[in-house]
Length: 610
Image (cartoon, rainbow, N blue to C red; front, side, top):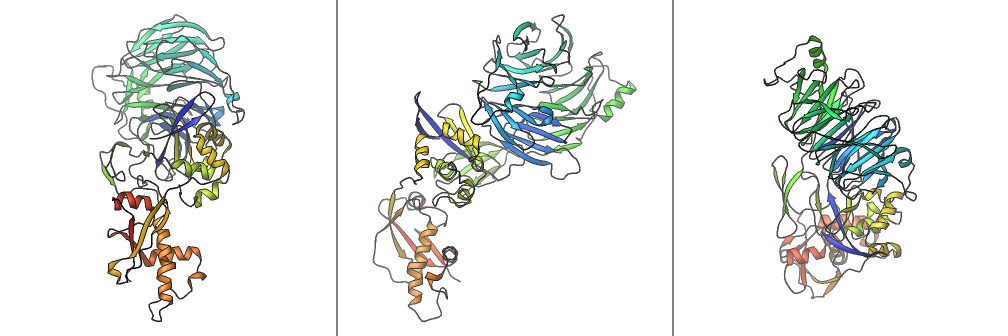
């Protein structure tokens, strides 16, 4: 990655800049989906996962395209999400070490909490108190008042938080009851730790699991807790008795996801073995195999809009999200027709999901070829693609990856910062994004990522969003100082001059010109040289002739600049070493990747045959 330095009061900090070349709208989850939240009032499902994007979907089955919008700000896996304030606010936790607060209806990030020092793995929510807890690999649990968080602004983003200490290992699961009187954490320490969030006092430690505790649930009054572990068991705990009162062994492998009905009588579980079971907590022998997924199960979201629940949404390590009907299971339960032999294989109640949110592929391997312009990629479907003449559809600097190949691939350019900040920070973002600055043009949907060299990511934004209040403040805190300087003075950086010769191609039959040595910025596009040839050489020749070989009836000086550019591309070809040049590339690219030798660059032109 390209590295830049910024001088601040504390010390010099290296900042690296990268960008993602991709389609304008990333409709599909790519790779595993770690988190789900359902808003039954608006028929919306929120998904988030390993591609760092939170997406909103319509769960109305009558809509052909269920995709609604994407929310992009995180720079790493999103591990958990919580809907608050009756669906108005979404809280997300990420491996980029941040917790973010989103306007769930309008789809924008309102504030970023940077209190954690490591991956944030889990969130918990007390609906009655509008209280959220976050925890992760830094062993810390922080408590957040949602009403305070939603009042934060870019200029007033100081927030106080209570913390719960005592965890001795990384936290992977968290639960809080609706009334906010009990909070429990699960970790690789293999124990459950319990606190009172009102006083931050430790209440107890519950032992019994033999592996990481991956999922936790609390009943409303905080008297009972359910835990799922990588040891393959589900345990029911009595907090009053401070002990495990039941153990459920329905899975062959680790239990990673749990859901429970409102009455706290039936538990839905899934995990590494890809199976989803419903188990009667009062009689563990009464269980139903709902379905089998095609990959390990990461998260489940029960549709609690009715009792008993009518459906359950399931996400896995694959990018698809499935909705499974529970209607048949309720008939099953009413009939009392259960398979009580836990050792016998069960027949799944459902063989096909009721609804599918399709996912996309993700790049799992890539190799940059020696010419630094072509890339070989392999995706999660084991398809291999070769990107040729990769780059933006707009003029590019070093080249990149063609839009749409498998999805997101991050490439680095030490010049992308000009495209974003020079065009955006001073507030003229809309018009200048589209037109560029004469040297660079970046699509408005391009994500740009800033991070510490060899360390954590600092900030991510889309080009089109960088004129916003929050994004502008974060840019000023994050980007290298020399970018700020350039932006303030509104000067373009100094580019190197490149000398070259311009001659007619031998196939044109034209007389070789006197070898005048020309020079231009190394960032000048080939199309600009083509325009020069058309206006200053071809047009002058044809005007002096009386034959019908005139290129254009109008005098060159009367043509609009845009017309000249179009006509030049239609009429003129520029070559280097007999290779026809793409009008979008710059002289530096021609020099280093086509000419590839010492001495001044020589370009040849000719008129295209009609």
